[in-house]
Length: 265
Image 1 (cartoon, rainbow, N blue to C red):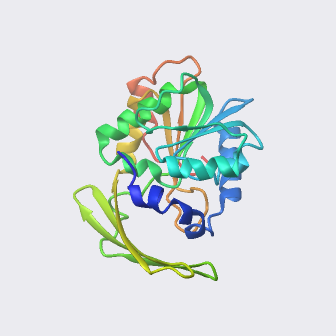
Image 2 (cartoon, rainbow, N blue to C red; image 1 turned 90 degrees about the vertical axis):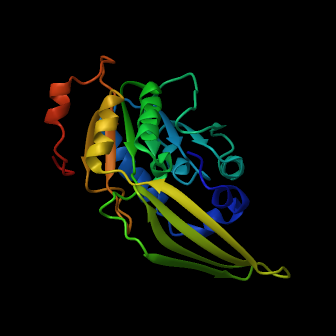
């Protein structure tokens, strides 16, 4: 369940330039609106799991006592430079243990796909639930569902500045219920040689019903929304609430919630 080493470690210094068009501010405001609707009335604490370089946290910290967690030491070094007053912890999303509970947990940018298998997904969701306060809410931006994933799809990103020439080409492959995004990088800096790196990422393809079921097994009241964070490739959102009494939803109540929700429902 570890992230690919190169994108998040060896290439961490290029990460923010590769994703320079990310709309962290508008996405953070959408998350806040969901917290206001489903979370505690006075939500104060937030943990951003797989926080990367802290793009969302720079906004979350305006409204919450926020912390970040990521598996990559290199990404966390950049996050600490960006947000020196925000606490960061290195850890894996399925096994971190912070010894505290939060009003809000977020796991965005499709990082949940790195769980790869349904048992690992359930382990991760149980860990999220264990770190939620009663009445707390977890917000997850999923990776693609199996029926949405396109084998052979390619995507090219280029960055062209005086300090950096970078091209990243990705090609989608598939192995069962795992997607393989094969990234190819060409990187040139002034006075240096052109570098080529290959960086395949393996991510699980989970159906909406499978994800909802694992959330419920983790003791969360689970919902799925087709509208996600509103960027170009909207993948929807999962919202899980830990019951205020700390109990798990009964099987009957869980069955009644299996219908996918629309944002206004």
